[in-house]
Amino acid sequence: MNESPEQKIVFLREVLGAAYPNPRSELCYNSPFQLLVATILAAQATDRQVNVITRELFMRAPDAESMSRMELEEVRNLVRSINYCNNKAKNILAASRILVERFHGEVPGTREELESLPGVGRKTANVVLSNAFGLPVMPVDTHVHRVSNRIGLVQTKKVEETERELMQIIAEEWVLPFHHYLLLHGRYTCKAKKPDCAHCAVSSICDYSAKN
Image 1 (spheres, rainbow, N blue to C red):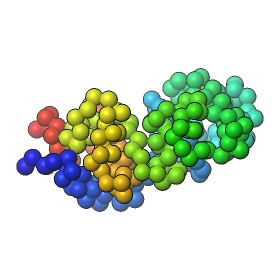
Image 2 (cartoon, rainbow, N blue to C red; image 1 turned 45 degrees about the horizontal axis):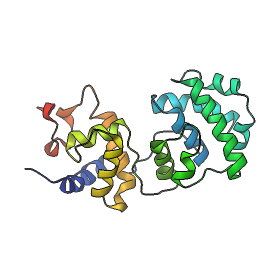
Image 3 (cartoon, one colour; image 1 turned 135 degrees about the horizontal axis):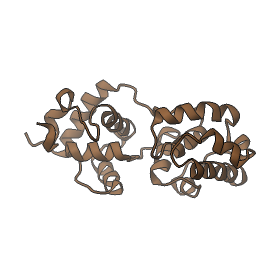
């Protein structure tokens, strides 16, 4: 069978929806601010690593106001085990101070305002908009990009292209969970180096040439 991307979307929604009935971010957070900080830290790092770090970080500074009062060295020490800790510490502190100065300590709910913060690019903004505000946007990380191309939903080289094409074929009401379906499938089954094709529930519609 040569299913269209739209047909594959319906199949994936059924199969991955059953595998992940209540999908959500695996980052631990209790507010949009904490999600923002965790997502900044998550670049080039695993959610598990981030959750270990933020446990103490959020005990010390659970909101933008308290984080903005910290010294850079203090923030750096708390995140020192993460990749690119120096830049991430600077960005977290700077973003916290901007949130206090410009947004009354609250995380803004628009892409433009989010991307004006240090350390926040399109993917990070989309993660916050999707998970904290419930907006139908598609954060595309390496997992989502890889799985989308392997399955044959898209044929793209850049994550921006993947995001645009996925948004064209996924119904708006499905966008929120679909990001998690693709991400979790890529994290636990369709791995970058050793995809577990033998135990993949969606291999029947997958175009990945190496699966056999």
